[in-house]
Amino acid sequence: MQSKAHWEKVYSSKDEAEVSWFQEHAKLSLKLIQNSDASKSASIIDVGGGASTLVDDLLANGYRNITVLDLSAAALAKAQNRLGEQASNVTWLEANVIEAEYPHHGYDVWHDRAVFHFLNTLEERQAYVKAVLHAVKPGGVVIVATFAENGPTMCSGLPVKRYSADELHEEFGEPFSLLGHEKESHQTPDGSEQHFVYCFCRKLA
View: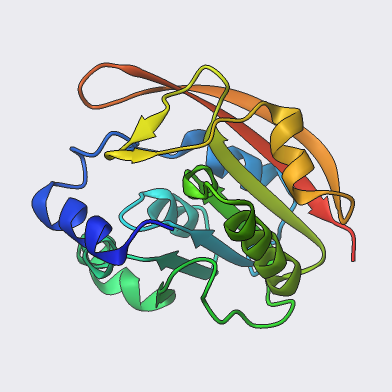
């Protein structure tokens, strides 16, 4: 797993709109959460959410029980400063996604855009899935986005693992029922293109 120091340096040295994964609005993520039929009071966690604007869009659309987890305190601070007084309506967790202490069956929706593809060992990926199994309620929805097969092989100076939709779902296995998948072509702030695949599934038990 990449080090906390690496991500603190990234977010301390760059504006949030300068990192390659920046989205002014996380439109596809928001759409998938809305399509999950989660109620406005549903418990939603955005892992690796950092400085992402997804939390802004969720609040603007009336969702009231949001948690943002990130390894970087600097990333979380950027989001908190941007939200101002609204930041008090969000639960903020500074932790490693595979080491964090989650409430058992605490979340209706688990969202991850671009954390899972940094897990390059089988042990890390198994720990991640174990965390999801513990944290997500039976019947809850899990949305995970990674670089697609034709996506970059590196991000922020670190190697990543690329996936097809089937390969990504196979990492999670039988406890999860695949609901669908979508592709996204992301334009980075410097004008280059990154290809993502989003898989969304239901946790069965």
